[in-house]
Length: 94
Image (cartoon, rainbow, N blue to C red; front, side, top):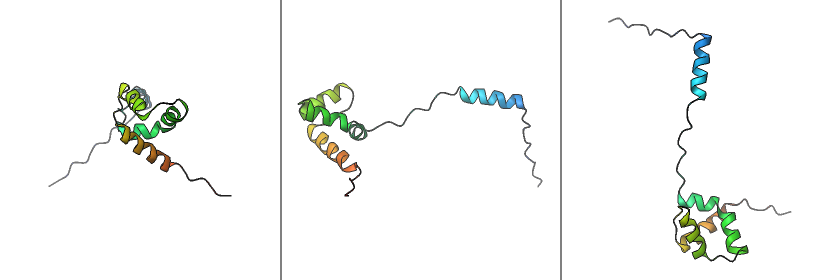
């Protein structure tokens, strides 16, 4: 049996320019969805500010997060904020 050789497309500069324009016009891909845990860890500095400086309770913070589409319980918030604290780079001893 004989195999047919694949024909290669000959590209011109005009074709490359057209491809470049088309690629530049492509919309961004949908970003990966962020879990509630990832959201809380990312927002940890702001949430801790509310808890420590603005006298919000964990219930208050949970309510505010829920209004913005981030669901959790006060206990889950406590756990995630503790995890965020543990993710910080340890301070150097000098």
